Image 1 (spheres, rainbow, N blue to C red):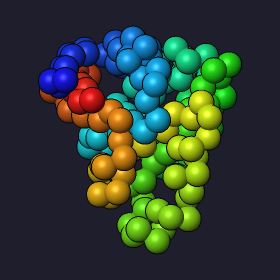
Image 2: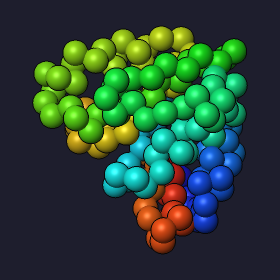
Image 3: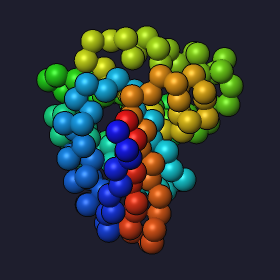
Image 4: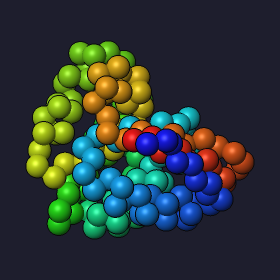
Length: 143
């Protein structure tokens, strides 16, 4: 499928777009979220988590320091993972991402996963968030 692009003009629109992506992610296991710091990756996850009834928007926060946040919904368990501070394959291996991805109903939403070729090969969907203004974003989805 060719990539799909969307424009959002506020954090609320980015959250809403995340929620609208849930049907597309229904069968996905690994989603890579790409974008610079502050591009809106966690904001998009807020909408995805809410759509899967795994967490309320206000309960979704960046896992920059904890590395993995788990949100359990009735049908899917979302793992919001941030690899910004992970530098080596060895550090990556300690997180057990492969084990998480093999859990029934797991959906891994991985920030900075493009740093690792192994994850780029395993991903089902890649979402690129680019700033186009102070609060506007271009969001491109590749399956």
